[in-house]
Structure formats: structure tokens, C-alpha cells
Image (cartoon, rainbow, N blue to C red):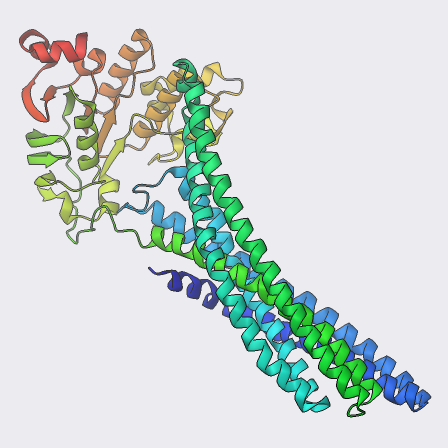
Length: 558
């Protein structure tokens, strides 16, 4: 997706509101331009000619015009604001959908905080292009009406406006280019700073635990300074643009006033026409100044649109296949000479209903395996099959209905404890999952039990409590294939043994893969696969591997 496509979609998607807003804005500016003309007519007829009736009629007409321009601006601005906010909302929805899409890829190389900035600040700036269009159309209408009136008053005055306005607008466009570049850099830096901040806040407890606060502060200070410098450069560009455009505008208005004054002194125009011309010259200052703001908004909108296009147009991490998943899902997993990341020629078969442990001596091997099983990445070589069907031939949406990969660092959501557990539950009863994971003990320890509100990412809970609730959520989903990654690293030995027995009982008859080094969990598995240096070096029961494999004993018991 291109920058132009994002901008075009933001505007055309709100065509009705923008059309209404533009028409009302044009009516408002037309009325504004006619005010000096009507004042000139009142002066000529009511004052210069002494026509009392004409004076009263002119004043009444002025009142009606003011009433009309007031209402047209009110409803036009409302429609433009609605278009702006609706477009921003639609972009946020599209961005969220792309970021959460099963095929992935949008978050590659981007911090979560950076994505949040794109979905909020950048979406808002692109949505504001609708408001800029409304204001720009209104201002252009005012200029055209003013030019026509000036042509009727004096051909020379009209030509000055008609020829000078395009030159002024083109100058404003050229001056907006540096602002567009610096605005893009500003948003990039700000998004990166937000991402770093979110990253540091998420790991605050760990940073405090290892005494790394000074490093974290220094890192954020450097990032924030870079963001501040980019913001100041963009602000300077904005100030220079506004200042130069305002100076050019003032010069242009002074020229119009000078030409009108000379015509009046020669008697080519009347006193009322001179007042109208002077009033129109002052009026034109508004529309012409507005174009500086419009150019700035469009420049910032283009910069933000490019960032949004980068996310929406990001390539998919995996390409959806067209094959159908076999129903009902048996849960047979087959890894055939799988190579991905640090894994090399991994051959493993897991039967339906089997509980299999996987021990890796290198955490990178575990990460690579989890990505392949959840199809967050496709193998560099070999294949991963589910019930005889290669995962690359399936749609990731179908895979998610059959295979649930519960990551070690899974986050909780703001809400009640029960709501977190029930988020993916296939049935209404979550008590079995709560009991198996030990989350029932967590609920009993809270003031309102399962109805207790927990904060974002579950930070109001301890690490062990948070881990048990996340495990309960995974178990409650009752997926045909469940892959657990180190689900009990933050609990005590007694609770760990209880959870191991609970998982064994609850997952009986359904395929379960436990990637862990926990002896308690490995002891309840049917079989354990040992992966060393990216290759399978052993496959046996936990007891046999403890007896026969030094590498296994080192990884699990040390």
C-alpha cells in the first residue's frame, strides 16, 4: 500500500461528510466575501446618496447574511470533524486488524509502543486531512468569490488577485516540503521513544531486580533527546513556513490595497467600492493565511500516511494456504527434517493424545520450535504436519482453531481474573482449568475472588499468580493441540507438582507438548525429546533420559 492510497482512502471513505462540509464551507466563505461588498453598497446608497430605506434594507441584508454564515460554519465544521474522526477510527481499525492478522509480519522490526503511536497519532494526523480539505475548499471559494467581486469593481484589482493567488499557493506548497520530511522524522523518533518507554515499563520489575535502573534511564534519556531534537527541527520548519507564508501574504494584501487606493484617488471606483476593495483585501488575509495551515496539515498527513502504509503494506510472515484442515482434529504432529532458525533436520512424531515433553539446551531452539508449531514462521527446510497435512498448506486462521501455542511471557488483560481465564474458553465452565493450573488458589487469595479486577498485563499480581492465570486461560481453551512453554517457572515446588498432575489429568486424550526443563512437568509426560545444538539427540521417558543422558541431567537437574 502506498502513501497516496492511504490518503485517498481516508478522504474518499468519508465522501458524503466531506461533500456536505465543503458545500457548507463554500457557502460560509461566500457569505464572508460578500460582507465587504454589502457594506460598500450600504455606504454608497445609504450614506453617500442619503437613501434611508436603502440603508435599512442593506443592514437587514447584512444581518441575514451573518446568520447564514454562522449556521453554515457550524454545521460544516461539524461534518468535517466527523469525517476526520471517522477516518482516523477506520485507520486505527485497519491497523489493528493488520497487526493482529494471523499471517503476521506487520510487527516485524517494530516495538509495540511504536505500533501504538502509528495507530493513534499517525492515524489522527491522516484523519485530519479531511478537516484540511474542508478548510482548503472553503478558503479557495472565498478567494474565487473575492476575485470575481474585485474583477467587477476593477479589472486590474481582479487580475492582481487571480494571478497572485496561484503563485502564493505554489510558494506555500514548496515551503511545506521540508516540513513534510522533518515531520516524518519527528514521528519516527517519537514512535521509537514510545516503544522504548513501553519496553522499559514492561520490564521494570526485572530492571529493578538486577539494579539496571541507571542503564534504563540513560537509554531512555538518549532516545528521548533524539525525539526532542527531531520535534524541534519540525517545529522550526513549521515556524519558518508560517513566517515566510505570512510575510508573502502580507505583501500580497498590501499590493491589493495599494492598487485599490490609487484607483480610488483617480475616481475610477466609488467610495463604497474602495471600502469593499479594502474590506476584501483584509478578508483575503484569512483564506490566504489558512493555506499555510492547510499545507502544514497536508505535509504532516503525508508523512504519517507513509508510516501507516508501511504497516498496512508489510509483507506477511506466512502465506495462507488453501488446503482444508481435517475434522475432527486428531492431533498427530509430525516434524520431518525440520530446519528453522537454530533447528537442523529435526525429526519428531507425536501421536494423538500424547503428552510430550521437549527439553532444549539452547533457548533459541525452543523459540524456533514454538514459531513453527504455531506457524508464526515457515520452515527453511523440511515440514511440520498436523494430521498428515503440511502446516504451510493451511490457513493460519484454521491452524489457530486446532493448535494453541501458550508462550512463556503471555500477557493478561485489564479486567477480572475470571474474564481473563474465560477469554478463550470453548465452554462456560472454567473451574477445571482453574483447578488444574492452581489459579483457583490465586482467586481465593484475592479480595473478591475471581471477580477481582486486575490491572493491565496483570501487574497487580505476583509473577507466580500471573503465570497460573495465563496457564488457566490456555487450558480453558481446550484446544485439540496445546503447546506450553515453561508454564511454571515462577511457582514453588509444591505448586509445580500439583500443576503437573492437573495438566496430566485435564489434557488426558488430547495432544499436549510441554517445552520446559521442569522435572515435575517432564515426569508426567509420556515421552521427552531432547534437543541439543539444534538437533534431536534423545527421545525416551524422563526417567530413562535422567539415567542415560548427561546433557539431559545438566539441563533439567542442575
